[in-house]
Structure formats: structure tokens, C-alpha cells
Length: 114
Length: 110
Figure 1 (tube, rainbow over the protein chains, first blue to last red):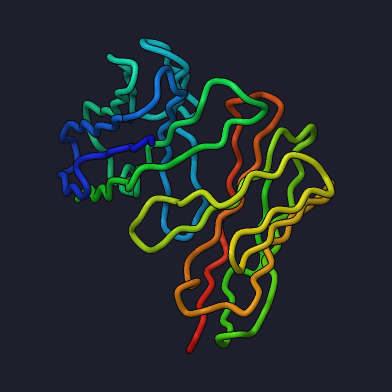
Figure 2: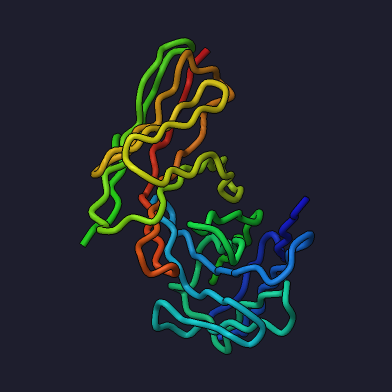
């Protein structure tokens, strides 16, 4: 069966510091991968998605970036964090075939920028 | 412009009191509608995918239905362990376009 991991689970960072969040998927090959941010009381906002190694599409302009160095690894980064980057970050995967792309989510990373 | 709207924002039920959650959407050419359950501090847990109007799916006390403009998540005889936030999402024809509602927070009292 497929498993998705995210780390760290929680993170407190000062404004202006760098960020690196990691997501890995087990039990499947060539998945679509996604990064979302969830603000308190709001819906999930899609930040990036990837259909393969080195292929990243950005949905929202921001100071965040994403990379996919390996088939089942997805990394979210920032060079300088802003207060507005605080939130709950979720990674998700889906199969690359089929009529829809049902997404399966990881446990999330709670980021607090102070 | 809101693509997905969920109502109510919050719902309090007594154990055994059945009810429905609503998800209305404005996306044209829907590829799929998804329901998730999210517990506090955790990632969303997949419940259902619905593809076309008229489709229904069930899982334990939950039943999801879909029309051309909205979906309902019916909860029959809920238990306290059904307390969670239920999220609805739709996928537009462009596969990378997913729109999530802000969720309905369900609280079931014993």
C-alpha cells in the first residue's frame, strides 16, 4: 500500500530565515505530487504540483519554491520566510492515470513564522 | 470568485441525529468531486470521489451524492467519533486545477 510522509511535523522559524519541508511517497511510481497551504478556517490553497522529476508548476506567486529531485520526493523551500508564510502545509500524491486525480494527503507540517 | 462553497460552516448534532452537509460548485466541466474528513492537526483523509450527476457512494454512516451543481454528504445516526471537519473539493477540466471549500466542522455530542 502507498504511504506518504512529511517532516518535520512542526516548525517554528524567525522571519527572514530559510525553509525546507520534505515529502516522500512510498509504494507507487511516478505519482503526481502537490503542495498545499491551509490557513486557519480556510480551504486548501494549491501552491505547486509536479508530474515528474524536475517538472514543477507554480499556482500562486510567492516567495516559496518547490523541487522534485527524485521520483517520490517533493521539497518545499524558501530563502527568506515572511510572517504570512505561517500555516499548515500539506503534501499530496495522486496516480498519473485514471479519469480523475484523487489526491491522498500526508500528515502535514505546522509552520509558525515569528 | 468562489468555486466551491460549503454549508453550514459548523454543525452540532446529537448522537443519532441524522443530517446533511452541502457542497455547491460553479466549476464547468467537472472531472471529479471529492470528499475528505480532516481531524484537528492532521492531513485530510479521503472519503469519496464522485464523477457524474446522479452518482452515489456510501461508507459506513456516510453517503455522498452529486448533482450538476452540488453535492451532499449525508450522515446517518452519527456517533461522536464522526466529529471532524469535512472538506469538499472539485477538479476542473484542467487536471491541475483543484478547488477546495473551507469545510464544515461537525461536532456530534453523546
